[in-house]
Length: 156
Length: 268
Image (cartoon, rainbow over all chains, first blue to last red; front, top):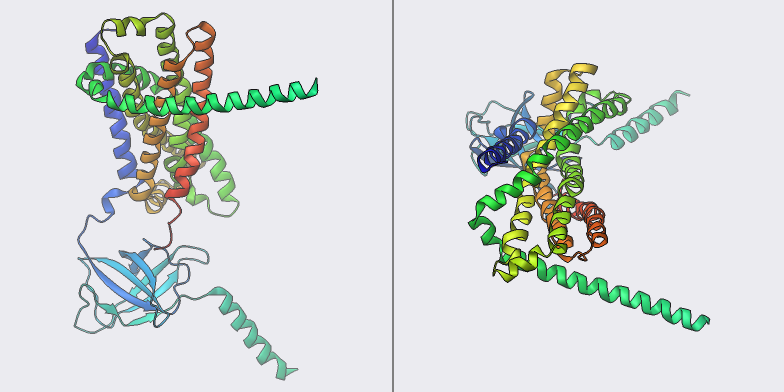
């Protein structure tokens, strides 16, 4: 095999190999939608974040408007502090309610934002004041059973 | 004489240990020497391109066909298992994650060790047996720069590309089986995959893994060839050691890398 043909084959190989990496990045890993848009940061305190993970989606009316950037525990109040990144294209009023929700019974955990009526908007670094913690299924079930037991007892 | 045979056994174990340790020392020195002579491999790019051809282009068919079949099997088995829990729609993320994180780099690495690594070992071993390496040294051509370094770098460059191709063919195979044959919705398949797999860290960790495997297998291949006993038997034993040692190195390194890479996910 002469040099020119070999170079051609090596060129083809490297090209389709790099093409495969680009395919993995764009089609499989969805690089394009990740952090290409400019965004701003908001914080919110929760009593309990349940199973919220890093990079979990932040949705408003079901539309993904941002991602969870960090989760930490406030050492003084023992509340969870969640930092989220919201796309610059979306603005939320100061009285927005952030709640931790689950899609389906066992689905992914995400943060839902419900905009209020305040004309002032949240800016970079500000805190969402109104929050609603995750519903912990075990607590819910035990509460339900407790209610059942206490309401059922006098009827007998 | 029992005491005599015990002493012989102890002596054999000790001898084997000392030889293994000194071989490891030689391998480390050899690795540094190869790195030292690496600029030569890039200075004369034609030599390295030739090795990319032998290690990469000639492995294309086996890598792509295996990737396709592994992907199709993943599609069938994954759908069968997931559908029991009503999660057949998650086939895309299941297939994508297993291929990008694990199967792509590991299986491509194993195939690479047996397809390309063994060939490199046999080639260098035969050069040593037929005293071509000594002849080069006599002509003041350093075989490390002329023979070993291009083969090492050819393997290191070819391996990540082959692993990426393997993953892509696997995803395509799973698409054929899952979407075309079984009837998972096309949009759900790709949408779930894209929602669940991030470029950073999933895809990049897969690429890092394949680069590490490429370095390990190529180093083992050139070292075993260079270190082979210059006999027909010695070359054959060295080739076997490349495939066995290379495969074991890939699986062990994979465990170590996985522990480091995916330990911190889900927490801050």
